[in-house]
Image (cartoon, rainbow, N blue to C red; front, side, top):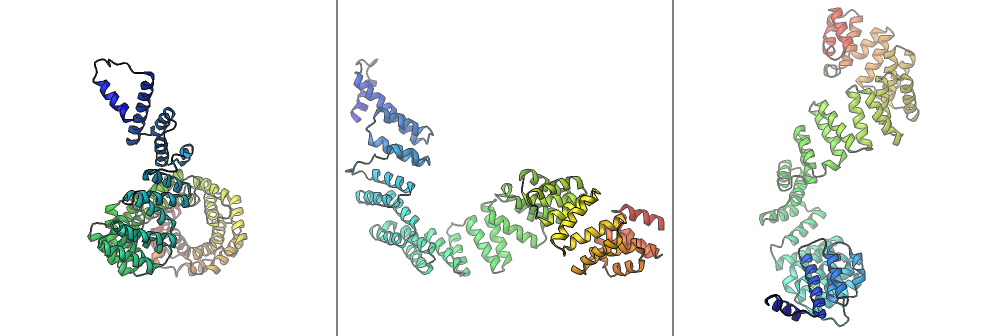
Length: 513
C-alpha cells in the first residue's frame, strides 16, 4: 500500500498530472482514499466511522486489518452485534498482538470469557511488555472475581513488577467482594508496600475497615487520602456518615459540607445535610439541601419532603404549591396524590381534594388514610350520603379506626342529627385514645348539642391552654359552652383565641360582649 501513496505524492508534484493513471491505479487510489477517510473519521470519533469503514471494506473485501477496525469500532460504539460479520479477522498464524487484543475484547463483550482469556494470553505472549494488553487482561480477571482469577493476577504481578501495585489492589478487590477481608487487607498492604501512596489500595483498605466496623481505622485511611489530594464527594460523604455513626455531629456536618463543595448535587450528602438541618430546626436550609440533590427532579418523595419543611416554616401556600407541581410532575404517584389531597383539605379546597383523593383510591382502594382524607373532603362539600358510605367502609374494615369514628361523630354533631349515634361513635373513639384532645372536643360538642353543658365543660376544662391556643375549634367550643353556662368573662377569653379563624366564634364574642 505504501508504494501507491508514494506514487500519489509524486504525481501531485507533476504539472497537471502529466502521466495518466491506469484503471488499476485509479482503483487503488479509490481504495486508499476510502480507507483514509474512514480512519480519519475513526480518529475524530465521527459517528459515521463504522459506515465509512464498511465502504472501505467493500473496496478491499479481503482486508483483515479493516475488519479488525470494524470490530474495534463496533465495540467503541457499544454495538458488538454489528461486529459479527467481521469477527473472522484474526489469521490463525497472526503475530500481531493487537489482533488478539481486539478479539479478546470482542469475546469478553459477548460473554465468552474463556475465549477472551485465551486471546489476551496470546496477545501477552506476543507483546509481554505491552501495558495496555496487560491492563485489559487484568481487568478481565478482576471482573471474574474468582479465586482462580486472583491466582492468575498474582502470577502477573511476579512477571510485571511495574504493574504489581495495580495487580495486588485488583486481587484485594476480588477477595473483598468475596468477604475474605483478611486476605483483601493483605493484598492491599502488598500494593502499598510497592507504592506507598496508591489511592486505590488505600480506598480498598478503607472499605474493608468500614465493612468490618473498624470505623476509626477507616477514617484514618480516608484522612490520609485527603492529605495526598484524593478527597472527593464520595469519600467526604462516607466520612461524614461515619462521624454521624459515632455521634460526632460537628465533624459529620463539616465533611458533608466538604462533599457538597466538591459535588453540589451528591445525593447521600444532600440527604444527611438535610437531616442535620432538620434536627436543628433549620427547615429552610433543610429544604435547600433537598432541592440541591442531583435526583430531586426524578424523586417524588423529595418533593413531599420539601413540602413538609415548608409547612414547618409556616408557609402553607408554598407547601401546597410544591405538592401541586409534584402532582403534575409525577402523575399517578400515590404518595404525592395523598399528600396533595391532605394539603388541599387543609386549604379548604374540598372539591379539588375529593377529585385527587378519588383518583388515588381508584388505583389503591385499600389505602385507608387516603379514604379518610376523602371523607374529610366530602364532609367539607356536605356530600353526607357519600361521606357516610366511606366512613362505614373504614369502620367496617377496622372497628377501632378512631379517626374515622371521630369524624363520623363530629359530622353528625355539626348537623345536629342522630346525636345518640354520634355519642356512641365518639365514645368508641375515646376508648381507643382517651387523652386525644380532638376526640374529647367531639364528645363535648355532642354534649353541648344535647344541652348537657356541665358534662361538656368537664370534658374540655382539663385541656391545656397551649392546645387551646393552637386549635381554634376547641377554643371556640369551650367558649360556647362557658357562654351557655353564663360564664361570659371566661368565655370571652377562649372566643378571643378563635374569632379570627371561626366566624361563629367572632359572632358569639360580639354578642356576649
